[in-house]
Every structure is written in structure tokens, then in C-alpha cells.
Length: 240
Image 1: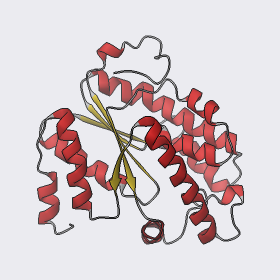
Image 2: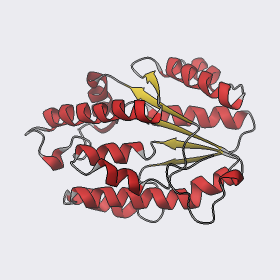
Image 3: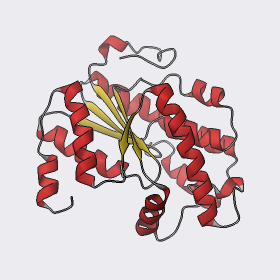
């Protein structure tokens, strides 16, 4: 494995025998569902897994939640909170998991905080430097979903649009709906740019859960050479 910049002290890339699989996408794109299905599929076939994602660090996840409730974070504080969250998971979950030969599944990775910061006007080079110690994933899937479906899924899940995921903190529009549309469009543009730069595999996320999962598993098989039964269980439940 390799790193985007200088590797962390005391970490030998040759010792990282596991795999790092990332699923990226905007809020409501179906990332978490796909991560859950991949975990079941991999573990069914004897692969130990670890799962990481944004705001899941034991160190600062609760502090991030509290800070977001106050709607008072500056854009740089917002970025540094999530950078701290990532670094803690890198040191305590990602690297140990890769050393142990596990498959680390990332429900979003460094790309989302970089995109969020860039959309909020922070320097892209500064953000990329912060995350330069990150391990380069084996595969990055980018679930592309149309704006209308994103809105429908967000409203269905939460009953309202999230303040931060609508970009309300940066004054993009007066109402949450209009702000959400502008913010998600800009985030999508950043992901499209990063898709070419970082080599994302684009997946049409407008389709059924089963169709998306089938595409993702097909790509993973080429890298890991495994088969699995998670999709068959999904189809039996009638969720396709």
C-alpha cells in the first residue's frame, strides 16, 4: 500500500496487507446501505472487516455533534474537527486493521471533508496537505445520484434537510431547500473533479440497492477474488 504524501512515522507500507475499500457519495446516495451489504458479504466469505466513517472517532465524535447543534462553527473549525476525527480513526482503526490483513470499509473517506472545505472557500491545497498522511485506497466507489432522489431520500430519512448538509452556514440561499440544491450541486462538482484526479469508479446510484451492490461486488471480485451471498439474501427479502 502507499500514502498520498509522507507515510506516518513508524508505519511500514509493506506491513499493510489488508485492503481499503471506500464508498463515497453525497448524503442520501446509499453509501451506508452498500457498506453494510459489503460487510456481510465479505464476512460470509471469511474476510475480517473494519468499518470507518465520518464523525465516528471516540476522540471527537461527540464534540462534533455538539458543535454542529450550535450552528456556530467557522469553516476552518469545521474542517479541523473532521481532520482530527479522521486522524484518530487512521491511527486506531484503519492502520491496525490493514496490518491485521482485514478489509477496511470506509463509509466516506478524505474526499468528503476535502470537498466540504473547498465548497466553503478553504484552500484545496491546504486541505489536501492535511490529509496527505492518508493511505491510498485499493478501490474508491463514487455513487452518483440525481438531486431529486437525494432530496427525497434525505426527507424520508430525517423528515427535514440537515443544516450543514444544506450549506446553510455559508449563506448559499435563503431557504433550506434552495440552499440544499446549490450546496449538493457544488459538492457534486467537487466529486466529479476528484473522480478524475483520484481515479474513482463511478456507479449509477439512481438504481435499486441490488443493482448497485452487484456492480460494486463485481469490481471488488477483480481485486480480492471472492464470492458472496449478501446479494442473494437481499433479493430474498424483496428489497431489490
